[in-house]
Image 1: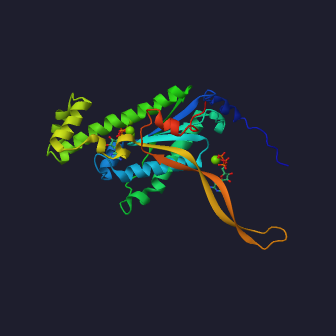
Image 2: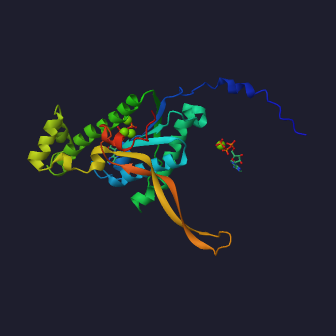
Image 3: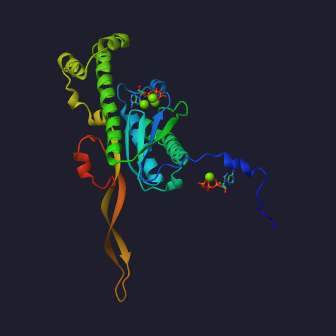
Length: 269
Ligand code: ATP
Ligand code: ATP
Ligand code: MG
Ligand code: MG
Ligand code: MG
Ligand code: MG
């Protein structure tokens, strides 16, 4: 008989440190593409916003939500995505390193796996990677402020990038000239440059670019017909309704109350 004795090496396990996430808190994992400034250049991302790249980010985030447990909402923009685990999650005993690495590797492998669906024949030139971090938020207010912070960041960057690339692409400035032109300008100045010099109303820019992407679970009633055989009856087609949940994408304001009032089930009390 084989005796499963512990080896004399077993003690090294005790060097592992505890990284259990505090109970009751929302666990947020944020990923960010490594050196995507270069990645975007090498893969000829359209400036300031490449919709193929944004689509691939969202597709990869959807895969994370579908394959891993307990993620209630995710929010992404540019080369980053944040994933929120429900407060009561006990997945991997709430071990931060397990959650973070599963999110990062599921996301990275999906980014490569689905590349072709978004970039077609354009080749992926090298394997991309994403860093991850874990942050805990104890209250709904804190969590909403976190998501608001990321969406505000999306807005600030997108306004800057929109003016910057308009000055370059339509205004004929070099990138250095455009940078100098924007030094010290306020949001109102940037809106004014777009409007008065290029007849662009920033608020009419695509909402995907201005607001980013929020993914949540939505319940859907789904009716399928099933062949059934009841006692003393012929076999027949019977409609069966069941509720299924699927990931839905929203490109809207998540800072104000409206989104949360319309989706009251996302956050727990
Ligand atoms: P780090 O490794 O420190 O994150 P980084 O180069 O990835 O470095 P970020 O601050 O994360 O720096 O910025 C991401 C960059 O990726 C942006 O500046 C932008 O140039 C590019 N980028 C990401 N997504 C897109 C997109 N959809 N369209 C165009 N450019 C994009
Ligand atoms: P967990 O998600 O907890 O890690 P797991 O199924 O990955 O679950 P492991 O203890 O990591 O469990 O074991 C990995 C399993 O993968 C092995 O039991 C074996 O069945 C299979 N496996 C991995 N590499 C090989 C390989 N090269 N050849 C055959 N089987 C393999
Ligand atoms: Mg960064
Ligand atoms: Mg990055
Ligand atoms: Mg980034
Ligand atoms: Mg394993």
